[in-house]
Image (cartoon, rainbow, N blue to C red):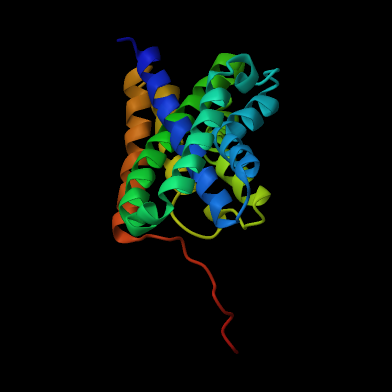
Length: 219
């Protein structure tokens, strides 16, 4: 199996999991099945669409390769149907399902972040490290931000969980390895992805969150 096939498989896994998180948000907000599909698709391919618009890669990959958008739509419909039919059972064991989704969500974040940097390089911006890292992070977290904004929520990455920071660290490691020719290709991608997965795992286990001010102290 080639590296491209492996990346494609992980991208499909990420697409499925991101779509499921979109449906979960839709159910929390009591949206109908159409709303669930829209949020599921936005979460799964939204980051990639924004990335391609910034890079001037038009039409975006989501429309050039509709397999990801179709997968997101089918996944959203199936997830909504399962919630409709097995709602009580899912609610009873939600903690277990949430942990599984969180694990695969981390995989999707890693794959999409590193993949976003590769797309920047393919578009001729490989020497612009700042742009590459920026669009890489945006690819990983952009869909979730769109989902939350469309659902009328403050994006989760702005107020809780070490999520975007994990993407940033992984993207930095990957870009440094490539820029300084320490590693290239698949080994560098694996290192960047592992950093993202490691940070997300530690943040989940130890319940890490970035500092925030709940209430200003009186003078």
